[in-house]
Image (tube, rainbow, N blue to C red):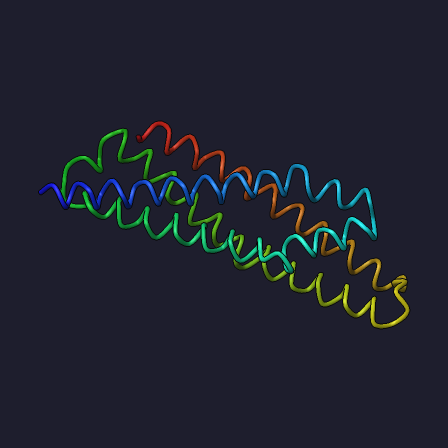
Length: 169
């Protein structure tokens, strides 16, 4: 019994730490890094690419996201047969968990794919003459707007996650 409780606490610790990193990184990037990079234009975009790709921050964020979601599923499933899941705490954790899964889906299907397209377009621009054509500029602006929208939706979902986890804990 003592080992089981220790494993539960260890998994819960991993869940909380990975979730804090994931949500914190998303809020900092969406709220501060991206807007600053956009204001700095070319240099800012190069910094943003270096931060996410060369420093592998994007990979660490995805590892944290998957770790938080999968450990959350295991923790939630631990009490699947108990009546606890139909309580206010269980429902709050379920809503928060579903919001986290939706945020992960947006991160994987929209943000990651769009960031890859932006990186490829940036390389294409650098390989030509370093100055984007009007079509490339419009394409980059459209991709940035898509990233902004998805980032705001993800941030809203994270607020639901945080409320759900706070109420359910």
